[in-house]
Image (cartoon, rainbow, N blue to C red):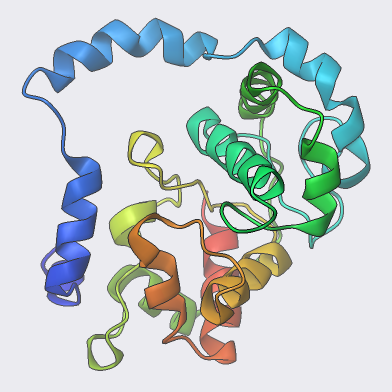
Length: 225
């Protein structure tokens, strides 16, 4: 952790700390929620029924066969629900807020909040398929240690050693995700076309990454399991 913390700016530490704050009785609350988390907030069966329109891009079980579209299987329900809500927000505010995507705009428009919660539950309940990506030295270095000279924060601080993220803090699972999708999203954060990250954390980091960095770290992230 010393190596990771050394590359965090004061703002990075403040941002991460804000998301990880919890009440004093957080352990007791976590135990109380354990059954809910295992059983999901949304209705998995209803989510499966509603997912028929998602199959073309994400496949029936959420393991997209098209590398430019994300694998949804095994992603945290909280994160999936937030993304769906952000897509919906962009539609409702005419792209002034939320997460803008022309394909998702058409798919999300008719969905209710309950629909989105159920979809999130269904895809979260599925098992992610393995990735064929191989780790590389540059990607591992950026992911585990960042780059202090360029002000790049280590990815591991939010996404974890195994790329499983932190569901309660809003940080997604990135292990086993498609390399192409990861690169596309890093590029969108870098050019500002995606802006639904918390406190601009991803935009601030991606702005400092080169194309080579993105390729390497995407490969490494995809290889995590």
